[in-house]
Each structure stands twice: as structure tokens, then as C-alpha cells.
Length: 188
Image 1 (cartoon, rainbow, N blue to C red):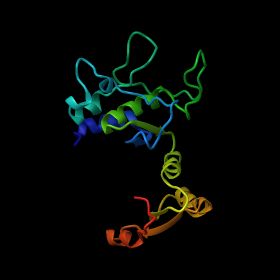
Image 2 (cartoon, rainbow, N blue to C red):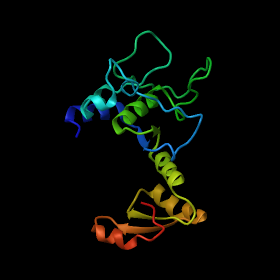
Image 3 (spheres, helix red, strand yellow):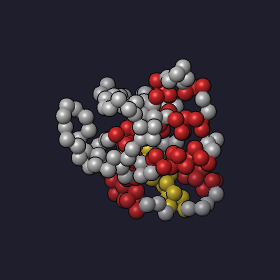
């Protein structure tokens, strides 16, 4: 369990970022995607992730910058730029990726111990990506209602076009209500 200080540090760093941690390389396979790694994942001063506590990971997992100045910030700066001047490769547009999102991805991945982490600039980008990554034609999902209106629109109007069905459960109901709506094709 993270301490209050470690948790606050995470909140300070990751405010406005929503993440999905990929726990297996079979879920997201791409030869072009090299997820950002923290210094602890690469090993620093003989320490590796398994050698330190979750609090240490939360406060110490820093993104390894591939290039740049000879100094490296201890706390990653938040870059407010929306577009970047290209020299050779690098970042193009902040809704795609940025130094800030790479730092967040590296730290979250170190904490979660996954294969890679993706952060999104909006909640709907994260939610729709989760739907498209984990659902296929013929699947069924159980959703809490009420839910965010844009999520409801995806479930009500778009998922049926892909032969994905949904059942709604009223907010605050007992777990048994969820269990009643589970079908053989329900994704868990």
C-alpha cells in the first residue's frame, strides 16, 4: 500500500493523465512500440524494481530521456506545448505523445509491473481504446448505470453495430445484480 506522501506525488505527476497498463505482451503486440521505461526498470546503482518498496517506486521511478541536456530533472516537468518543432524524429503533437506522457507511462509501468503503459489525454480516448482492444463481435459487457453520457452513447449506438451487446445494472445495487446479468459471452 502506498503512503499518503507517495500517493500525493503520483497525483502531482499524473494529474490529467488516464492510463491503461498492459500486463501481457500478447494483448498489445507491436514491433514499432517501445514503451517508455523508468530508471528503476533498467536498474540504477544495482537496484531493480523488485528490490524496492511501492513507495520508493512511486517517488523514484523517472523516465529515461534518450537525448537532451547533460542534466536530468528529478521531477519530470509538465510540458504545456501542443505542437513541437521537428529536428529529426521526436514528438509531433501532444495529443499523440510528449515528454510528460512518456514520463507518466514509465512511472506507472514501474509501479504496476506491466509490459507497457499507455496514457491518454482524455477519458473517452482511454475508455474507447479499452473497448476496442478487449471486445470483439459476439461479446457481452455489464455496465453500471448511470454512466458518463459519452460512454452510454458508445454502448448504446456504436457497440451494437459491431455485434457487441450490453446489459445495464443500476448504480448502488448489490453484486448479485451484476451476477444475474453475466452471460457465457460476457467479458470479465
